[in-house]
Image: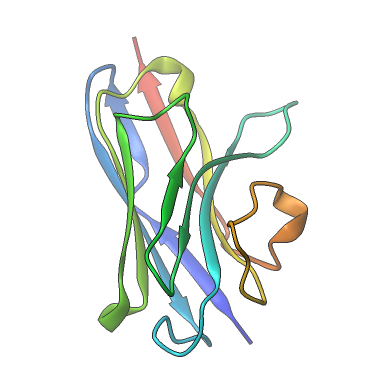
Length: 128
């Protein structure tokens, strides 16, 4: 059973930084290619993909709304996914989730329905 546990959320002022961490168990990053992603959701809105990463070749995709400010990365040895968030804006406030597909994809999907396993989420609050 694949499990994901996020951490690193918190409350920051606009312009600040946070690094989110997602530890994955039940799947080894180095074993086969899967897509990992960070999604975010605010109440009343659809869950949206912020960034995706292919564990096999390390290919990443960043949503235009956060490009240049957010970076997604992996540590294969630790089976861990990261989201480095800089220059945070109030509109970045949301619950952030990490997710993984159950097979390899190319390119990595951005629809939440294409991801099989999810973490419990970590809250990010950004004050103006």
